[in-house]
Structure formats: structure tokens, C-alpha cells
Length: 336
Image (cartoon, rainbow, N blue to C red):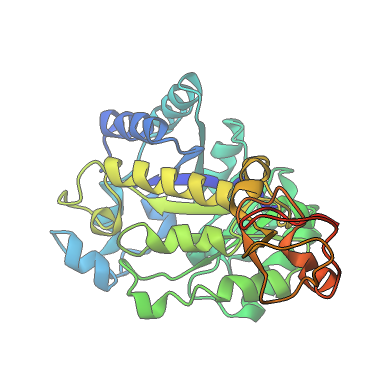
């Protein structure tokens, strides 16, 4: 049976360093019907060196210099702001958690008691981070953008060695391109992850434009969907252009819920409504012309017509060759 899909609205750094914008994102995620909203926690000086340059999509979507450090400093939330956001999200009845990009931030996040943790694609080879996450005793989601199957396996082994159970880990297929072109999605890789790592949950972190790929991932069995969202795609910042606006997020959530319901339990049987309709649309064996008692029933004097209130049409071969037990008028259901 398909599990309900856990939908994460990735606010990330789309608050642009503003607590008020971050709160608005939490509210919009709740209204859209997402299960959780995710933030990003980091201290810029602990995340990148002074010489780290912006990658391509960051250069295209942000102004200022070409260094990551200055860009990331403007996107930081203080610890007090993060604590207020966690309290705010809980008060609104939506799960709230964050991705830590350095050990100091992870240590602080653990004090906020999130329901789960997230390994972003860029941290999948960060052994100290993985080791610490494995020891925290909470479910962990691992994004696999840029990773080989061997690197995913290595990360999982570190988490498992730290004490996590396989069922506490969810691996997300992901492409670290913002936005991801359709030809680079390779959604079937999610099935490869499922086959390669039995017992581990699988899902999809979506960086494409629109909602159709996320919905398709659910049809393929994703138990978790993560999608960036923003208040306005035209805002300056590294992730806004590859994010959904609130109305689109709500559309995605609705579509995923519908697909999840439509997948069902896989057992092939008529539904309750189908049983009510069945007699009206299936057929019985009826006389195609007037038939006299004792006359041989054959393909010339029989046909099949709705409703299925007489001998069902699937017994056609059993009826052929029998003598008519009485007179039958044309269109009358045959009896034994």
C-alpha cells in the first residue's frame, strides 16, 4: 500500500534574512497544505572560505560580488530568530525543521528538538556531519544531488554506524541544478536507489520548474517530496527562480494528495460503486428472435444485451446447443 507522501515546503534562504518574510513563508506553507517547512541553518564563515566563488546559478540570480561568503552572510538567521521560527511553526500546526551546514549550527538545531534532520546534497561526503547526525536519534533525510551510487552507500553506512535504523533514513533523488532541465531529471534513478538500498525510504527533491515532475515521483513511489517555494520568484536571491510561488505550492500539494489517493492499495477488485453499477453495464444472454420450447439455442437465435439480470454473458458457451426450456420472446433473458 502506498504511504501518504510527506511534503516538505523548502523555504531555505528565500526569506532573504528577514524574520518577517520567514514567518510569512511558514504561513503560506501551512495554507498550501504542506506537512513541513524546512529552513537552512548556517554560519557563513563556518560554511565557506573567503575565497569561495559563487557557482553559476548564484551568479545569475544575485547581485554584488562573486564571493559566496558575502552572499551567505546576508541570508543568515540568528539563533534567536531560528528559535522564534520554530515556535511560530509549531503554534501554526506545521512541522518545522532545518538543514545544518556546519557542526556548530547542527548542535544548536538539536537544542530546538526538530522532528527530523536533513543532509543536503553538498554535505553527503561530510563525514563529521554524518557521524553526528547518526548519533542524534532522529529520522534523517539525505539528498543525493551530484552523488554517485557509491557515495550514497558510503553516507548511509556512516549514518547506520552512528546508530540509525534503515527505516529511519529517507534518500531523496535530486539534481543540483537550479532549475533542473527536464532532460537531466532522470526520475527513474529514484527506483535505482530503492533497489540498491532495501529498507530505506526513497523520495525526490525537486528543482524543476512547475509541479509535474514532483507529482510523477509520487506515482513512482516517492514517500517524501521536497520543493523550494518563495513568496515571489522575481525577488533577488539564489533560489527564488527555481521555487514555486504559494499558489503553485498549493496546486502541487493538491495534485500529490490526489495521486496518492488514486494509487490505492494495489488489490484488483471492484469498488463499492462499481458493484452498484455492474448489473447495469454488463450483459445477459437474451433471445434475439422469438424462440419456441425445445428449439436448440444457437448463435442465430441468441445475443447478449444489458442488463446482467439473467444468465451472464460469460456462460455463452454453456448455453449454446441446449434446448429451450420454454418459449422466449425476443429480448427476453434466457433461462435454463
